Image (cartoon, rainbow, N blue to C red; front, side, top):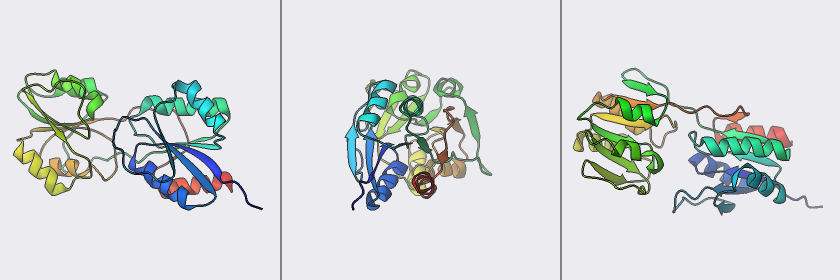
Amino acid sequence: MSIDPIRMLILGGTAEARLLAARLEEDMRFSPLTSLAGVTRKPSKIAGEVRIGGFGGVEGLREFASREHMTLLVDATHPFAVQISAHAAQAGAQAGIPVLRLERPPWDRRAGDDWREVADIDEAVRIIPQGAHVLVTVGRQEVAPFLERDDIYVVARMIEPPVVQVLDHAELLLARPPFTLKQEKALMEEKRITVLVAKNSGGDATFAKIEAARELGLPVIMIARPEKSSLTTASGVDEMMVLIEQHFF
């Protein structure tokens, strides 16, 4: 007698989410569906079923998960995606569906790092010194406050262009990670960067910019991760697979 595969909803948008979907799709016991917010217009290929778009808040997510007979929800969104993570936790609790979080660990300060750790975007913008040449890597949705400062030169790097206008005191670089240490050092030297602004996203894909700043002796304005609701959390795909196995078997 055949047994229907276990339906699982992955809230994706990260490399870890793609890796998890691939692992689950290979396992005949599971049927993963990855949901993307639709912020990136050309996302990387994802194994298994994929949907794109919002849910309409907690209620919409709860109804979707129940209607699609999901038995587990995995929040594998970006560490800074506060709202969808909160919605996932609330929707799971309301629907009686367990929720696990897949979130890579943050970067740790190492010998030679010159970090100025701040709580949020506003503080990061405020402490940039006048006349600085700043490499800003916070994404297109939060770059606007940096562009409003006309006493600094901003090099804003992101995957897709922002909706705000880029003025004469700034330039836009469209590029998709990963980046190498050699590439990052060359970019910082070419653009005469004096300060790097980054979110503490963790992972390997964009860590080279932190290494490059260290080797070039540049300060890093490091934006701390926001607090999220407490959930059972895996720091990598292997660990998440263990949690899933423990939950179902």
